[in-house]
Amino acid sequence: MAFAWKASGLTYNKYLSVAARVVRRSLKDDKRLAAERRGEMDLRMAKWKNGKQGEHQNVADANAASMAEAAGSPAS
Amino acid sequence: MNSLRIARTALRARPAAIKAPLQRRGYAEAVSDKVGISTQILRILLTRPQIKLSLALPHQSVYKSQDVVQVNIPAESGEMGVLANHVPSIEQLKPGLVEVIEESGGSKQFFLSGGFAIVQPNSELSINAVEGFPLEDFSVESVRSQISEAQKIVGGSGSEQDIAEAKIELEVLESLQAVLK
Image (cartoon, rainbow over all chains, first blue to last red; front, side, top):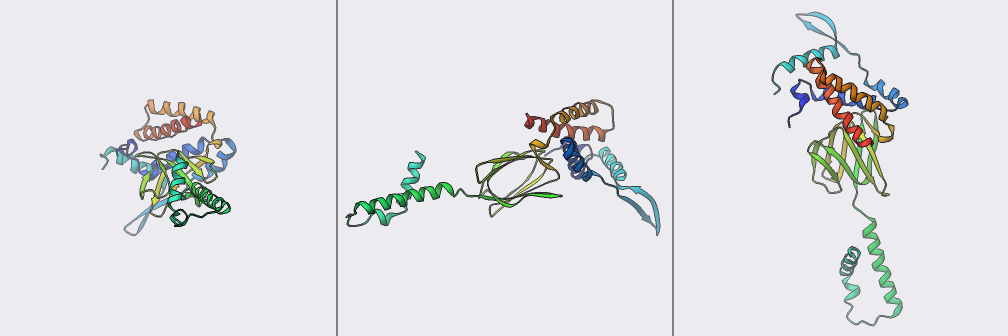
């Protein structure tokens, strides 16, 4: 099956998280506040090269950048 | 018509009672025979084969190996109803409505954000999704306002990724709006 999101460089994981995010936002206020806390993510990473630590990066930002890159090349 | 057929098979299933060589049955005996058949029919009608459903989200398990009669799922390959003894299969789910028909005859509806349904060989069904809520938890106004927002992004000049995300949101929201009506 050909999925539009795949052609745009998104991964299945990203697709699921976008779909889940919009479901959470569509809830009634009381449920929404409790649910939206589940969508929060704050992870940081750093690449190590030649024994030296590179600069800290936000994982979400790094993912977005790599997906934008993937969008340029044809999806396999 | 249908119950007649069941009655006939029930009769056939008790050949000993019918093909008694010397038919010298008294009144009481005939009555007890009738009772036997009707309880058999009842048993056939009441014990509908069941499927064990597990509906799991990362933060909650909605059903935990619970016996249900039928589950309707929105698979990418099309809407399907899963009963007991279904062919084993793995189905990717579209964001959409999952309907669970329970033993008591009542049914429950959940909107899932997309995931997988796995039909196992021994009448077991596992559904995994990221988010899933009963329909009454959703706000129609919020869905409507998000649709117009997403449409703006899709038609706008954002990055390819923003447009792709807005398209996913639009697909989910339209599916949600369709079932909320």
